[in-house]
Image 1 (spheres, rainbow, N blue to C red):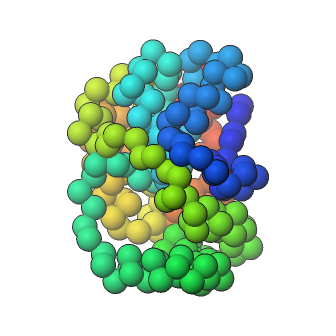
Image 2: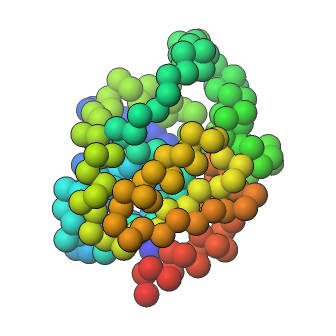
Length: 204
């Protein structure tokens, strides 16, 4: 099993040049000599996994999508939230961004593990948009997915993310949809055994 952090997140260095999430994924797979894989993507990682499954279906054997954020989905506008986020980024207010992240993404509780996840993510929020080259939207191409797919979302996640997950599962042929009881936007922390069992089920 291989796990990597997107540029600027966790233990990955901040970006210094333009990059594409799916381009980085392909680079990782190529460097490791992995020709066909089961992809597990959480949040924006789900969108990256879907993009590769559409662009290069022969390379993706199965997908496990955890509370995926899917580009092209008709997200409702949230101008007040956007303004709050942008003001915190402009002020480079790391503590404020962590508090905002806890409010949005940690509905199951502000424990140390959830705080640590956000502390590892917030630095990327400050500068990523300068270098991020967004991949083409994938929502309208979900019907093309050929890989076996499981979509999982927590009942404590934001309602809009539950809607995205449901719509994604409905559009992907024969996709399996799983509710995670007691989970928010950190399903790997809240339901680690259930997530792991699902990944192994698709991998074997």
